[in-house]
Length: 498
Ligand SMILES: C[S@@+](CC[C@H](N)C(=O)[O-])C[C@H]1O[C@@H](n2cnc3c(N)ncnc32)[C@H](O)[C@@H]1O
Image 1 (spheres, helix red, strand yellow):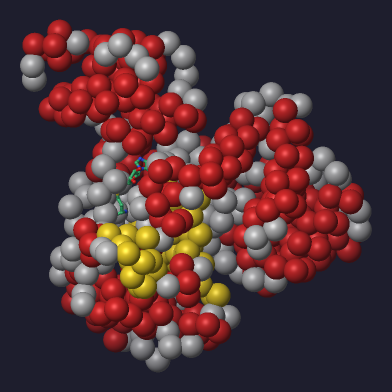
Image 2: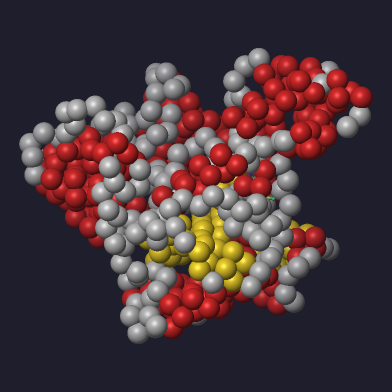
């Protein structure tokens, strides 16, 4: 470290703690040179004199969205390329996906993936291409690939779906010829059939809430979070992994990179080793363990006649843990409050049992039915989720929340028109229902109806203006007013950038 950085050590230490807390990024002393370099570059963009002045200035106020984005751009590495770590894709192609696909073929042909920390999108598109190759009738399936990142520039590039040769440095020969169209010398655009399988969105793994129906991070079959957590402080990385485990369906997989620092896995995640790849499977029974490839292969073989070892292993009801683990322990708690606390911990079986009791009592009956719809949607059981929405609506036809949840469940089933209809009903019953405006805005945007989308987003922003930024939005599962406003603004920035 040069003399300047040495002089700035106390400041660098203070600033690295601040970064860990605000973005999750981990800069131990051996990486302070990188931090210094990154801040020097960011200082120019922030129009600050130098790195020291820039750090002091950033420390003086909480980081807003724009500052986080600029810092993320200079302090994280966006390095990625198609089919990075081929052995991970081999394990997926030969071991994991055949079983997942076989199981889903019997139960509705729906698959949900999430590339968390997707950078410029190569990982998400590689997965889309792999799925097209493995599922000949993929057009008859609903395959949702959500790809999120904290860096809007990277997301804008991903949305544009145009890449240069460098992104293909590890790619098989057929990739360019079969799935891309050359637009200029050394520029290749991905084919629309692949492009439309992936949805890109801004999501800060440290700050945003997941799993959530609002940002589609619920009931995921496979999450990719590769080469992201290596930059996080270990306790914060563990928190991200815990939340990922809640976003997965039972039997779902978390894919990390072989070069990622091994993280402490929550009790519900079982580690499975493949040649050159380490994957983690959610096991609802909650017994932490690790499995050798032999044991894993054996478990697949012995289960070949039943649905599958991977996805259909029926979740055993987790044993009720001591009451001390159920927050908040303030007596007397209603069945509904207890169900809600269990739901927030991802203990869906117990939450469902408790909420079903609450749904039979007069107190909190409607909220209990709403919660049951969410619990089942989070587990990927959309049929039961829809039944609970119907019950809530049958009980009270003018219940806007029931209609809103029905809309979300219909949309997750690909029933866009019916879902939009339910959202309009929600707004008819409650014109100030922020999430319904937001959701309609997103749908109109996807359908290319930009005028209507703008109208809904403007309505959303108007409603948000009337509330304090730290207030949690109803039915959003933890999203604050300020956060939603930032998301809408960033979406319009992204649109301008593409
Ligand atoms: C090295 S890239 C990984 C890309 C891809 N997953 C891969 O393995 O090829 C790391 C990405 O993580 C993103 N990232 C870093 N911190 C993040 C956070 N708190 N929330 C979301 N994404 C984050 C960075 O912006 C960057 O695009």
